[in-house]
Amino acid sequence: MRISELSRLSGVPNATIKYYLREGLLPPGRSTAATQAEYDEAHLRRLRLIRALTGVRGLSVASARSVLDAMTEHRTDLHQLLGIAFGIRPPESGTPDAAEGRPPAGSAPEAAALVDAMGWSVSEQNPARQAVDETLRTLRSLGIAYDWETLLPYAELAERTARHDLDHLETVTDPLEKAERAVLLTFLLEPALMALRRLAQENESTARHGGGEHTQA
Amino acid sequence: MRISELSRLSGVPNATIKYYLREGLLPPGRSTAATQAEYDEAHLRRLRLIRALTGVRGLSVASARSVLDAMTEHRTDLHQLLGIAFGIRPPESGTPDAAEGRPPAGSAPEAAALVDAMGWSVSEQNPARQAVDETLRTLRSLGIAYDWETLLPYAELAERTARHDLDHLETVTDPLEKAERAVLLTFLLEPALMALRRLAQENESTARHGGGEHTQA
Image (tube, rainbow over all chains, first blue to last red; front, side, top):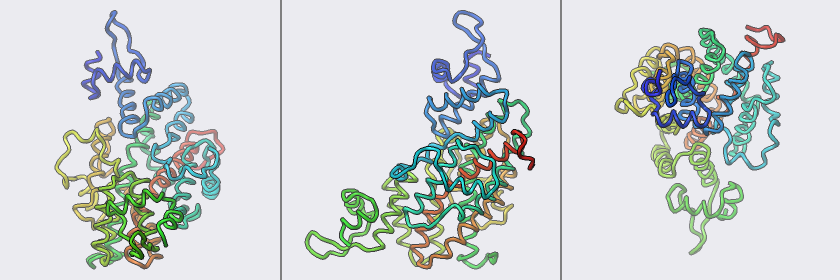
């Protein structure tokens, strides 16, 4: 397809597609004339992934490119690919308030204790480890005495959540497409999962403190 | 305590505390002289809450004030208070991409179907409803055929997560402090819960596709 068709199907403006091509986020199309190129389904999928990384999750263009480069490099190794897809750090996990007194990167003793206790196999480099320790530090700085053991019941629920996530990925066969899907689901489901928690919290709060039409405890 | 002590204990600079006082986010202290006032534990707690709302979760000062005003207004009604605490919209749930074609506020048919199916008691005004529908629309615009039924297993896990949240709140007795704690936990635990999901995803992915030292399916 031409760039105009790619733009129509993806909803991404022509000029933005050309910018992604110049910046190397989108691989070049197949040249058909001096000023024309053909694009395919892989371009469309890649474009959706770029939009998810930069638009919905707010990664910089440079960060998105390094994620995409790493995925392309490991495109034949599903385990590596999914490691990259699941390891992308959410931009909001590094809070300004947690910056003081932060230990060197890679040192997340509470996450390590939690991962051990759960019997999980997780690489030392997974940035989610830091996010766990940072959150616990932030909570304690606000007078809430949470530690990694407090998180254990949540970790068990996260384990079951991850199984649902991976079950869904089983329906996709192409490794790169599977990794793209993993990124989309990991990032894009987050607002819905947090929204479900809020709806459930309101329900649970009504059941415990509310008008009495609920009796469930 | 004096403002300097309040600043030391909270880690919030003097000038920032004065700004919060001017903007009405922090109630005035008890005047002890023409230019001096005494502050107490309630000011310290309120200051931590303001920092959580504006710093960690990125609410504007105006949004934070309207949340705090609503909480103060309903300070004797725990059910109302927790409704406010749990109903605060996360700033990232309204994504730019989802803005086109958005139905009028309050119309979230997929969240409504989900809430019904779960048997939850949730107010029509809870903004998490919109976040559910927006996420599903975003996923479908990217070619991922999720609907509210796909979210049912996640909703069941969210229900159990909310029970852990509310169990923790039982340890706090003062209604306003309970609501403050609800806000802190709802907002501040989110990065850790999403981080736990990523760690669990890596573990699950390793178990299914990895080096073979894991056999769990």
